[in-house]
Image (cartoon, rainbow, N blue to C red; front, top):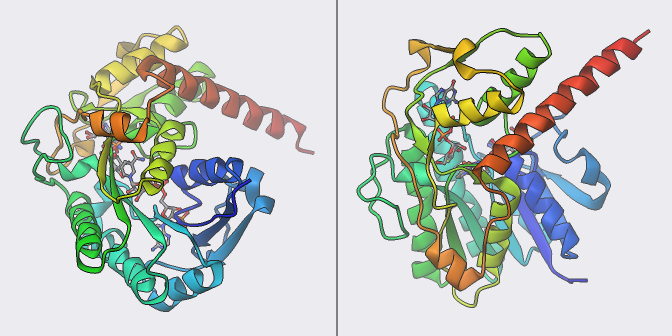
Length: 330
Ligand code: NAP
Ligand code: G4F
């Protein structure tokens, strides 16, 4: 049993839910910052709702972040909240800059003024590498972001490094490559594919509209990646860490494997939609996680094929449950 306390922003998101579970298992007291909403969006944390404490707050609102820090008195703060969907960042570039970029400074400011000893984790992203300068990408690869989201994350990364260097804070930046799970939002390509595959299998859909099939990503399982976040904050010295599988696969390969999982041929269902092509694309991501392996002792438990299978199976079960629920309605 640990006597440590963690504060997580973005606890209602994919990573927030897995991280909260992991920290609870380690014996942490867990607080989460949530935005007030007319309709609660707690489905990912419903199973641990009684084990965590939620505090209303917003990355746009400094005083609410101050209150969250004062109330929780955290040993560790994980800043996972962000506008995290890349296409939305072209539609809402200013809001994305406020949430995903300046929001990092707001929470760092709360800590600098109120709780400088708390250790800080920033959810940085491989999207910062953008038009990649080298393959594979390491902690030292220069950034060339290709979206307002990537630019905002680059700001968040550098302000984290800056607060570490300016104020001696234990502030870490985890440069995480794409990580997925059955809890992934439906708009991201992996979940869009696995959810639609399950719908097609059950006769609820016939086609899957996708954009760039050639884009390559380094995909891993979110449950593995949150362990790396925690390990970073256990190191004596704060630093930056690439967290990745070290393998790259195309969107086409992901779709092919997902359809094969239910005995279907992807070519019979996938339709390319030019409307889904991005103004600027990140063509190839593949990370070099050597530092995380060697310094953190971190490793993955789920490979690419295992991830696709896990997500397809979970979506098949999810649709089955929805159908049963509907059949039971009076
Ligand atoms: P996600 O599922 O989209 O979750 C985002 C979370 O941020 C949600 O809890 C959301 O709350 C919260 N949020 C958004 N705006 C907020 C605001 N203004 N104030 C307070 N909370 C706010 O994202 P994820 O996949 O878990 O990713 C977690 C973090 O890692 C994000 O920062 C993302 O950019 C970064 N990242 C993700 C990946 C990946 O592959 N998943 C890779 C690298 C980096 P609501 O529920 O209220 O919307
Ligand atoms: O699943 P995606 O939307 O993820 P993307 O843009 O790589 O961003 C994710 O990973 C980042 C880490 O590198 C995170 F920081 C970020 O928060 C987010 O979690 O798209 C992946 C690829 C892209 O190249 C996209 O053009 O899939 C391609 N794609 C092709 N068709 C599509 C689609 N993406 C989406 N969302 N929807 C499509 O229909």
